[in-house]
Length: 71
Image (cartoon, rainbow, N blue to C red; front, side, top):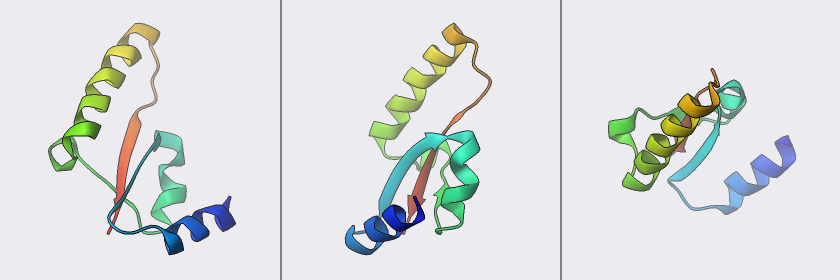
């Protein structure tokens, strides 16, 4: 996984956004990604977070979704 991520980081223009399950956040932080709060997110991700909130309440899942950014 590390090799794939490093290759993507080398080849992809910035800023780079990703969404992941909360338990995966620490792995991406090692590559320099930071977690965004909802007001910091592009509108697309804000809408996804609202939809996730609805789905989370229906499924009764405890884990959150993170939106992360690398400059």
